Length: 169
Image (cartoon, rainbow, N blue to C red; front, side, top):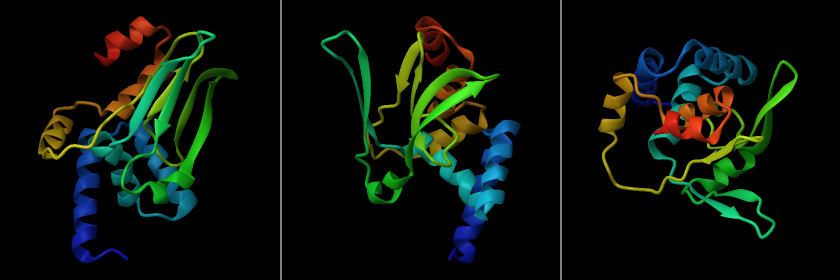
């Protein structure tokens, strides 16, 4: 159960996210999860931003002896036991055509690991640090997109490795 203070903080963060960070598509997706689960909008909204400010999850990209490239994500953050049951593999389609694959968390709208067939693969590798979070909020208010949301946009709209590098650089 949320206290009045924590409810106020969630509402404030969610309001900032709606104003400066989430586009209409993300807001609709949050509303869909709220309707399906009965969870508060503010909780889903803030939870979907957490990985952009503090994911602390290690990933590894490697080349197999047969030349294939692999991605591996290690759930090495402090709350692993709570989030591990939400890990799933997804396939995203547009007009009946596969656009990309993703390993992600159920209910999370950004992308941590994607594979675009015959195009590119991207995986977030963010180590824990003790830096202040206020620069992230300031950048958000200036219109900067979080890494997981930028990765999703790249997977949805780009076709080549070079395009992805240019977009994400």
